[in-house]
Image (cartoon, rainbow, N blue to C red):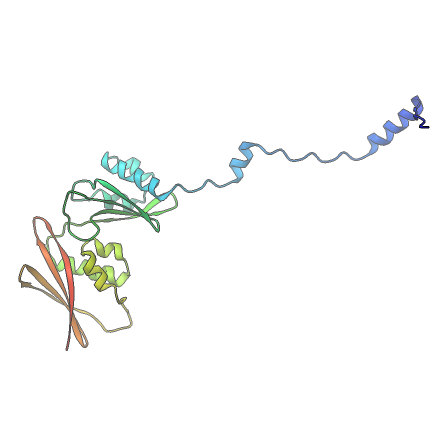
Length: 222
């Protein structure tokens, strides 16, 4: 048989005194959407979204909008583009997003505009360039090779020429290259770089009106 224990008034008062004397448990911290938003860093937007914002700002001629998503150098570069706007987004690879032409022939293998995106900013813009001197084209390609920058090389070099040049990386401790100028050859110019043991020739094609680019590269040995 079970007996129910009934506490009288004095017992209840004593129990209440003991209960109130215990330290109160710490309340669980409240988690709110505002707290979470304040403590969790926002994810960087996708490179394609950043590049698209700059591209649309450029099309609109809006430098202020462009400056919100690109560095000053990138903004300055894209607003110098000499050709009509590329008409197709060609996707992003390793943080570089490209817009290409499908109906316009431009010099080089870049075929439009490429944007290097870091976080929420376009940090560098590459362009198909309108260069009217063969020697300047050769110098631009050589400098891009020295820096190991393929996108800069594609600004003035056909894909095959860039692929040939970059088969071997430039070695600053290797043989010195000396520019020997450009001379006429059938259909264009040959711009020569001599070095101990041989020479490299950049075969330049195009015109002043259309712009020049390097279509192929060849080598000779002494």
